[in-house]
Image (cartoon, rainbow, N blue to C red):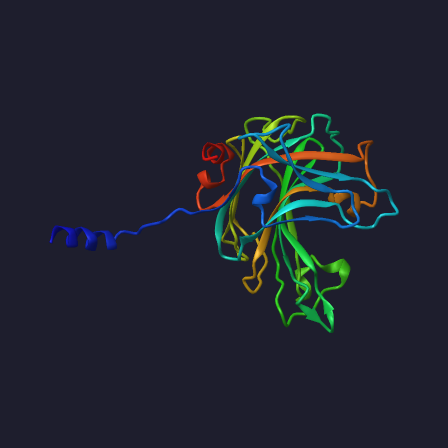
Amino acid sequence: MLAQVITLAMGLLPFTFAAQEFVNHGIKSGWPSTYIDPKSKGYVEDSTSVFYGGSQSIKFGQEYLGSSYTGRYHAEARYPNGYKRDEEKYYGFAFRLHSNWEFDPQNYNLAQFGADFSDIKWNGKSCDDFSPTTMIWINGAKLFARTKHGQMIKGQSCPPDDQKWNCDLGANCQPTDSFQLQSATSNIGQIKAGVWYRLTFHVKWKSDNTGVFQAWLNGTQVADRSGVKTTLLDDHREYEFRVGLYANSWHDDGEMVGNQAQRQLWIDEIGVGSTFADADPDEIRKSA
């Protein structure tokens, strides 16, 4: 009788179950897939030379190929179940730039989310192909992030190529909001070469003004944005989560700034889940 009462009482409690849905201890084979632009000289490989936890990490590299190369510079590990609109998750990883990293004023992306929208067409033309939403990158010695909102839904027209970010046209649109990840009380957010950093972020993925984006670097909060739009209005399709090196400015700017044509970085102790601990590299390496 007592057991029945306890069971009934427990059934009335609002239980919330935490779930660490993905964890990787710096092992390439632990990822569902990787992506490297086919004609680039990028690579994704296991490394035992430097690591944050355990005895290895994943090394990502790219090389600038000059103005005659018009492709992109992806070298990334991919987790297919990054998020769907209206979900809420925590993500985290440890990263380290090469000890000789040259801090130039160009973007070198460390993590991003994106989905394939090539099926959404208007008059036979796709509105977009692979569309990245949230991205996190290094520019100079500073860490930045962005979120994307707007809409990408079937039945809506495609905007002109130079008006993709204009939602006033009534067409599918993708404006972005970029911001620096920095502490209000210290210089956390200033990145040094050859040093490991722990990045953890929490996102409530909303296409209306109920979204949340928070980030912590080495345990110090460097972003706290609430009441914001954090993703596109779409059909609840899946966005993948990528980490690695994407030297996107080399393509977008059409040139390389500075003198360092070869770039390398390491990533270790990656996690995705429903709590901060699920994505904290320090907690993740304890479970290795």
